[in-house]
Image (cartoon, rainbow, N blue to C red; front, side, top):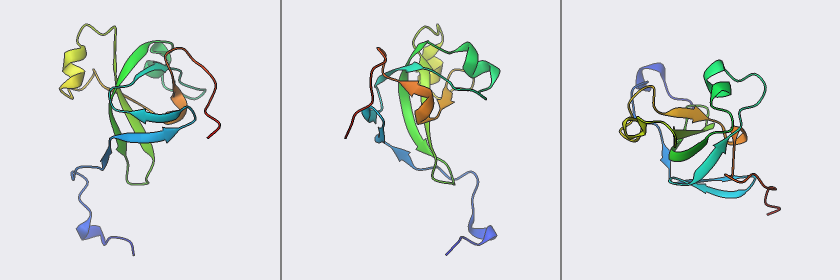
Length: 108
């Protein structure tokens, strides 16, 4: 049964996960990834294409979509990203990240 409007709190903490299944196996907080945004990405995502990043959190939105928050490894202000400061954490879908060396997806 859907929540009544008065029960919905847009500022409530969203579910945070320690891991998520993706095409290369299991992605975990702390894993290193390469950013590979696809067609239709915004200009910031495109500017970050090919960079290495560290998974800071794995979050779900209200529609149960998974978003991966990363901190770019070469960012001189990456400590701000680890402290969840705006402008230093970037969100990508599971389809927009890959293992640091690329590779083929897991078959399992």
